[in-house]
Length: 453
Image 1 (spheres, rainbow, N blue to C red):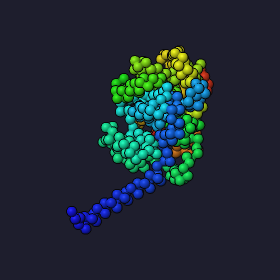
Image 2 (cartoon, helix red, strand yellow):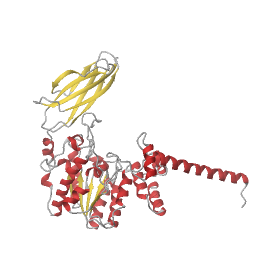
Image 3 (cartoon, rainbow, N blue to C red):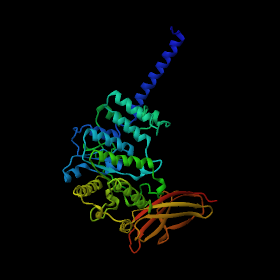
Image 4 (tube, rainbow, N blue to C red):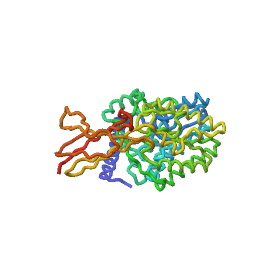
């Protein structure tokens, strides 16, 4: 069949267009996407491990790779372990990694750092970190494996109708470095060396651990909001994945321990009594499968005392906190290995709430009352036995020299209405201290634009 010149031109035009798109996509990907990702850094270190050399692995999301230091645990247990945590790692991908590591190393021990967030309906999986995970897994693999993994992501029922299924081939659309970081990305890609920064999210130790040095600012980092949770929010799909992880470990005769990595008090207390209800469901689910569950947020301070300096943000350990926690995690593991339970090291529900003796942080809510003023209500993240007193102050932002002026001294009422007589922008601040003490324990500020009606 002879093709007309007109058709030939159209074909050539289409080929040229596709070639142009491929070139532009490659250039944009090279310039914009980060040198690596949390998943990429993990796979890079994991592939350096000699096959069959790992005794224990850790699975989970950022709580895992920022909170568990294998070197600390190895020193106490005599094992050789590796941290396989990746950003927003779903239970689906934890299971995939578990299957992979069982085939390549047959470890005798597995620790799953469980983030309850991924047990919630609608939160089981997230396309962008999963796309980064698949790309990282494909690095250095044969083309047949790359195509299989890419097709698996594109036609995954979870993402088949999602734009991310197409964006997988255009990584610069959803995976971008920080503003102004493209020069560092390009330099790193040309040199083949990761940018050297203690707090660069993709730098990992050879054992997969990511040590962060920064310390959470409890007064000025974005506040911790209350979290609503009920039993109805649990995802059957997520629980099924968790059950399959338990079954894989059983089939391979590998001991599985599921844990909760320490968070700040604020992060735990924001959920209220529902936090313990959720823990009870998780513990019961795992007990039926003969798997231990330890939430290290509930551990007694005699064994692990986490301070405000041990966290990089509200929910993640920094390197100091990770080393503290990893040492105690090793102790619990040794107990389990010796046929003993570590349950006596942890608080009951009631004991935990009464054990929190500090005001960890404040959450402020505002309500503008037209013609009257601004109502501010403070919620303290603290223990059940702590009596809190509040002082309210304000600063007029229209005056560059203005300082905070206390408008209501310390008292037990957590709500105050700032009377306003004119339109303007003010910064309101609440100070909190424990009853009977002199010093402010924490503070929180909120900026409000008020229009006088």
